[in-house]
Length: 535
Image 1 (spheres, rainbow, N blue to C red):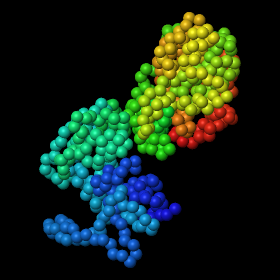
Image 2 (image 1 turned 30 degrees about the vertical axis):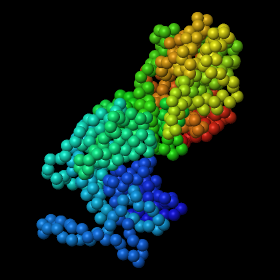
Image 3 (image 1 turned 180 degrees about the horizontal axis):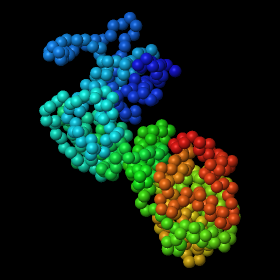
Image 4 (image 1 turned 135 degrees about the vertical axis):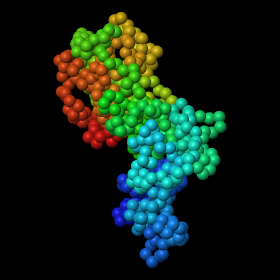
């Protein structure tokens, strides 16, 4: 691969790369604000200026500038090399670039940083960006100087509601235009623009519009300072108290890679952030996915229930075993869930086979709206995973399950998850001669009709594999401890199998995944289990 030199280090590059993109790919940070790897180049912040050395035998392009001499208290003419923005300058073979090793570039970084802070309010203690703000980071690394301007800073509108999800503070804005480019290039909805010039410039909404497309939270995510804040996260947590875990969004079948940010002191999740994966979601997530973390704590099944009454988990597990022990294979239906991980479904498949179940079905959320960017109309994160596990099993729909119950063919149901693709028909499971055991993390369509309801963990409380609509198996990691009396679904199924004296042959997650590897249906998914979340 062709290379160029950056601060005396050989950097590989691809055709069409700019200096900044090539450096970013190998983990080298050239200071920048307006550049983003997923957006077009604006080159308006000038923070990424670098010194470009001329080829051998050619003189550098020099500029005459005035420089203030503090001792003589006067300006004098000096010459300096012309600096170029690294985000815009294309790379060529053998090019030599100086950034951190160039005194001229470092002075330019400090000057740009000082310029951006002239009118910026020093409200870091209440700013949601504090702790992950590039203004703070680059002040420490490139400036470390006091503010020299003693005039009253320019004041602009604060706490401007842009729409249902975003609040704008014009005083903090450095006019990098990232938010505008997200609307134009990702959402294809040019609802944001600039008005005025110079230090009066601010971001504004198009007349008669509000920021309400499906990717509004990406405008806040790409903001390098604290100008755009998410109304959902605003003033709720400080980032230095949060910890992170890699995960996968379970809002639809796309399986966007994300990071779960949670407070370990309270075991509470506060937000999702998109995590780069060029094969799946690149750098982005939709609003629905970004806010889906709320389900981790809302609508949860926190305790076991027997016929509508609260119960200890062990007692409910005993009753579930008693109901299944009395069931005959010809009257037993096992219902898999496209909302649950492949590990959970794999365990249930093995238990169903051990019980000799004749009928197999699949549950999940009903289809919804999609788009041509990220959002899939399939609102289940693991439809493909369940299909792979059931390659040798004839699986019916939830509607077919309800029809079979109404016809009296099925009298015992063992169901994973409580979502129904046809929720209006869920009351069929409340038939007096039907015994229903449900393992669920959330109260949904079927939970109220269960004779025994066992609480299980959400995707944020246990590791699991989800296969997206492209057939890519991705692994999530546990972020917080199980909430309430919840157990990982696969572990609850293992315990239920033990009580039924039908041991499944695995007691731990590693053993379960080894069993998946040894099973033809699980080979495609299990091949990536050791590579970590999002692999």
